[in-house]
Image (tube, rainbow, N blue to C red; front, side, top):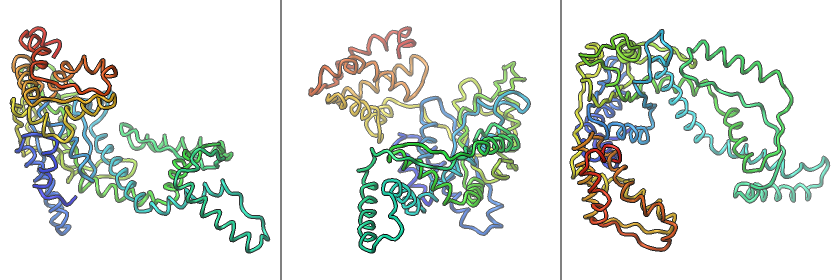
Length: 442
């Protein structure tokens, strides 16, 4: 991923409004990883990633930044919730499973790349298998003219299969029993291997050919998977994937505040809190984790943690873990203007989504600029008077405004429906002004 910090920020600007500091810090961390990979191996091993802790109330863009990073980057990336892990010795997921998840993600990325590189070979394999079933072979001793005619038929049939003209035809397909991969990353590697061995034993007990009548369309998917298994070298893919996860892997650790213990908390023995923090320490600092694909070192994996810290604060994390996240970024609360910008400037804003949804019913939805400003103003006021849930408030506010027209959209087919400032106030004023009502409705 060879993007400059400015290019990364520009991409994130399409989806996350404001939060310049957070975007800048993350862009710099990602670029530093690229710079490190250009150095000699000895120096590479010395440069450790600077892990990031993002602090900000709910709905300000922490999770959205991670979602967009995952789509933008072609490096191993996973987002996990810190609250779902438990201390070793308790029932639940152990923290090492996040590293195994990262390896699985890395394997999927490398496998997809190799499939793209071998696209022509896979395509030819699929075409040949299907055409063989649709056109019976020529008998031995056929004349040259018959062979020429047959060759022309083959070429014509290949074009028809490729264009989808034969998709509805039924063919009988013989294919190998597909080996099922067990990717339960919560299982210890030794147990996962035992489970896989059992799967291989049971698959060899029943050795008859797997024959099935399928449409040509379904056959393409089945044979593509078969071709991938035969043409791709999974050992090399696994080796490359482990290397990428080690040197370029990123783990977004969300809801880290949920494992912090507030000073007054009595839950010191809570298996999902302080014990999890202690288990996280060696992973974040750098240790070797065994997976069924091999051992992975976590020294150069970048961790981006995020939390709202409403009840607790970053200093409530154990000191050793605090030290593993040297870069701190505080995300700003959303203002009325920011909410307005979110509605009009984001690439796939809620307004665009609602317009697209109602266009299915042939209803043109139009928002006046004053109406959009009123929506932002009332959403901001609701955040101030009740719990501040940031941009998520826009979902509830817009749903309340559009509830009636959305319900009867099919009756207004071919019409234009204009959302005015008056309509917005009519729907929301009573609810926003009444604190008790807004707590339940907005």
